[in-house]
Amino acid sequence: MSMLKNFQMIPSALGAAALNVSRSIMSTLPENPSACPPIIFMHGFAGFNEIDVFGIKLLEYWNGIPELLNQMGYQAFTPQVTPFNSPQVRAEQWKMQIEAIRKKLNVDKVMLVAHSQGAIDARLLVCPNTEYVSTSLGPLNGKGYGEHVSKVVTVGGPHFGNVTVDMVDKDPKAEKILNDIFGLADLIARGITGKKQDATAAIAALGQKFMLEEFNPYCVDDPNVEYFCMAGNPKTEKLVSPILKDSFQELYEIPQADGGGANDGFVTVPSALFGNSYRGAPADYAIPDGAEANSNWTVLGTVMADHVVEVGLPLDFPPNKYYDHLACFGGLAQLLDPFYMAEMQLKDNGQWVREAMQDVQHSKPAPKARAKAKAEA
Image (cartoon, helix red, strand yellow):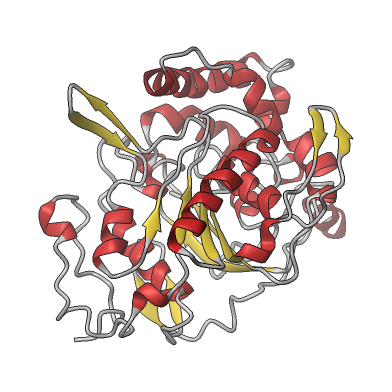
């Protein structure tokens, strides 16, 4: 039986059975997956490894993914940085954490899988521009860590920022939506650190204006690093977690030219895919005005999951039974594995199938929304 013909041997419900993956079933794995560079998972804002109360695990950010990859023979690590802070501060913290792992394992390179704000941190960590520049949020500089990173994968990364962050002072509805989201995030962060977090200040770095006008022009890619991206697009409110429903609807109602459109409840699809198109994209798919698509990035695809379910966080009610996060990230590890030569295509339910990817790799950038509208006028 080919594991990748239909990567469904891992049940969606996490438990002992989900992690007890038989080596015989995984007969298509490389002989020595541990030779693959370690995989470092980078959490987003309010991120954590796990939340325990009196020794009882209540919540795990990556929800069984590292354990699964370890079962498969890969080396997976989940460092933790401050839940809320600027990319400038967090990137430096990531560098220290990853450097400790790299030296402990005595390896030269690692691979990064980054979710949400972790995607922005990863870009700054790898960025070869190490000269400081002044921004509206303070000094910014790349950490030049690309020499020790072979691949970067972003999941739900806000590469174009979130337009509702910029609307807070003008739109009471946007203010309420963000207060709801970051109020919960702040509560989680306080549970982790025992201290009140300044979520409002931290999230300013994820605003669309800052990302498009200041961060993106400065934070260039390292030409020696491979970049990949994937997006969440639940398509229907029924698959959106309660905490993200208002944000999901708000972003859908905002014109694409202004930074709205299809989204995962926090990040639009064009933003997560860095402006590149994808298989199955609607005819009117476009990027916001002022954005520049980055064709250096390989689009892996979209999954029918919201911003938290993308990584398996069980905050959805009722549960999303369509998307399988374990299958998604198990297949992703094999896709990234330089010793595992298989062409794979991501489906929107998280499953992977063998299929040539030449038509989705380095997908053509999506047109800009306003330019398209003018052409049709």
